[in-house]
Length: 62
Ligand SMILES: [Zn+2]
Image (cartoon, rainbow, N blue to C red; front, side, top):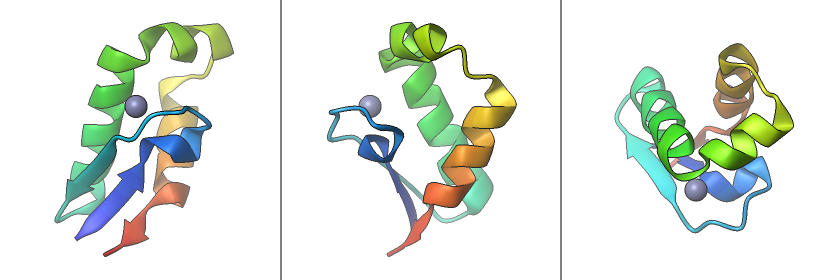
């Protein structure tokens, strides 16, 4: 199982995305970010590509 912690992005949030695949876990953390943390994402001015690249680096194997 692959996981990405929302806290890796510097947010004080307990959410952890989990999926069988790398693409799936990135999709889940992106969706979470776009719904729950839209304001923070927009404030940082990060692009979708930058967020995806960062998310890829945060993947942990569980
Ligand atoms: Zn979060």
